[in-house]
Image (cartoon, rainbow, N blue to C red; front, top):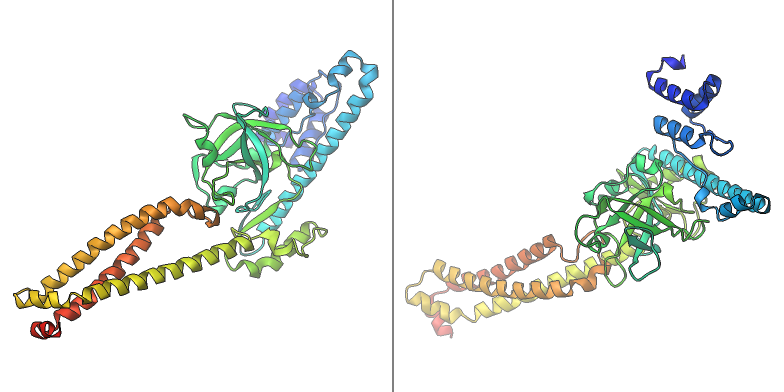
Length: 442
C-alpha cells in the first residue's frame, strides 16, 4: 500500500541502490520517518551511511544530524595508533552525541512551546530570540568577512542573536536586501546568516547578500562556545539595537536551531490587550512543560514578552515623550507671545498705512508674510541644530530614527501655524482700529 504513494517510489528506488534490495529495512525507515520519529543509522566506515541519510533527509525534508568527525581532536591519533587512542576517541564521540541529543530535545521543546502558545485565542503569531527584541544587552561576539574570525584586527565586534523563522516580519523589521529565514533555513544545516544595515555598511563595495561571513558562537553554557560558524549572508535587515551612547550596533542573526540557546525570549503578537492574555499563555506553556517557572522577580510577564520594549525602555520612552510635549508647548507659547507683542508694537505703523489708503487685507497679508519669513529662517537654523544634536538622544529612541523626517516636518508645521496665528490675530485687531484713534493713542 505504501508503494502506491507516487512520492515514495523514487525514494524507495534510491534506497534500494544503497541498501542492496533489503525491502523490509527500507519499509521500516520510511514508516518511522513518516510517523514523525527519528532513525539512527549506524555501521562501520565506508558502507554508505552518509549517502543513505542524505537521501532520506532530502526526500522527506527531515532534519539531518551527522556525527561531528572533523571536530574530534583524537581522530588523527586514533588512525595512527588505534589501541592507544580508541578510548579517548570513542568517549569524545559519546559526549558529542549526548550534546547533540540535548540540543534536539531543547529545539523540540521550543517548537512545542511555539505551537502551544500560537494556538491561544487572540495570539496572531509567535517567535523566539535569545535576547529581547529591543534589549540593549546581548551576546558579544566577533565576525569576519570571507571566513572564520581569526582574532586579528580585521575582526568586527558584533552582537550575536539567534532567532526563529518569521521573526522580522512579525515585528515589522524591514528587510532591506535579500530575505529573512524561512522554515527550510531553520530545519536545515548551518549556512544562512542575516546581518543588520550597520554591519552591511562595513562590508565595503557591493552587496553582502550571497557573500561568506564567519561568526563566533556565543552561547557560554554550550560545549561549542567559541567555535566559528561560517555561512552565507541571505539578507540585510534594518537597524534596531543601539548602545547606551546612541551608536548603532552591528548585529548577526542565525537560525535558533543552529546554535540552541539555554534560554530564550518568547515573543507573541496579540490582537487585544496583552496583559489579558498572560494567564492563557502561561497555561499553554505549562501544558507543554509544567516545570517551567512562571513566577518570581525575573520571570512571568517579563519572560513572556508581549511588547517591543522592556518596562525600563517603555518608561524612558514615555519620559522623553512627556519632555518633548512640554518643550513643544513652551516653545509654541513663548513664540506666540513674542510675535504677538512685536506685531502689537506696530499698531501706529498700521494706522499710518491705513490712513494713507492701505486696505486692512493688504496690511494683514504684509504682516503675515513677514512673520512667516522670519519663522522659516528660525526653523531652518533650528533644524540644523537638531540634526547636529540628535545623535545624543539616539540611545533613548525606539523604532524611530533620531532624524525621522516625519517628526521634523510635523514639529515645523506646528510652530509655523502658531507663528502665523501670533501675527494674524494682533494684526487683524489693529486693522479694525480707526487710524485716527491709533495715531492719537501713540
